[in-house]
Image 1 (cartoon, rainbow, N blue to C red):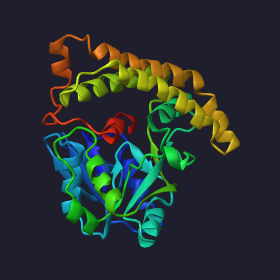
Image 2: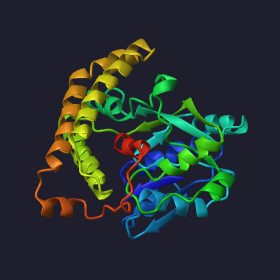
Image 3: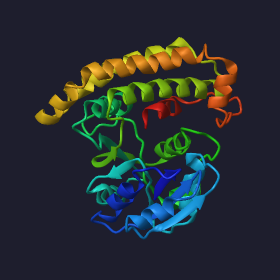
Length: 304
């Protein structure tokens, strides 16, 4: 299923990438925050089922709507700002049929020639590259057997990020979850320097606000973590096996450093922003009932 908010411009491309898979898929689009997604898809000549909600749904709630509206034995999700590479469905089915309960996917850029997009990929998803060493991999973009979702789910509907972390942890605790390096989701990242820096600043502020919403004050450890992430991103770029791709990623090194600094600045400055501006900007953020966020939830800001 495809998860959309307010008619993402890339929605037709996301839907088209699923319709072009070698394995047939049961496809539904869940769009919230307004109407118009169905009309946009019709204009693109894509006749698929669309569930539209006027109200804005958090990701977990949107996932639950899509799960309830479908019946296929395996369930996978694609954000409307991503496209599924060839083999996205076939690779998942292969691993599920081999016994995997959860199948996590790798990330790539939808604009591989853009230095800004490559920098964003390295900063946000350096632990989800096809070449990421097993000890560093993050298991996100997971597909599930329907029976496992019915048994362990649903997704938390009340959090802005990390809605799948608790469920994924439960799955890994009892059954096998695998990382399928050939199952690749291509994300649409910022393609200009200004857009990259603005996005990383916003993400840093949002990450600090999420920390506050869970009754934890944002601290300098988040900013330091962002700077350590720059080092890891550059190390991962050097490990990419394809020479041309490695060169393209390494060419983005100055932007990786600049983007990491922008993220750290966002974290740091969120503390000093006027309260009225923080509350206005993040008024949709739910509280987490005083619970501490897990490390897995903490990676939500790097998932795109």
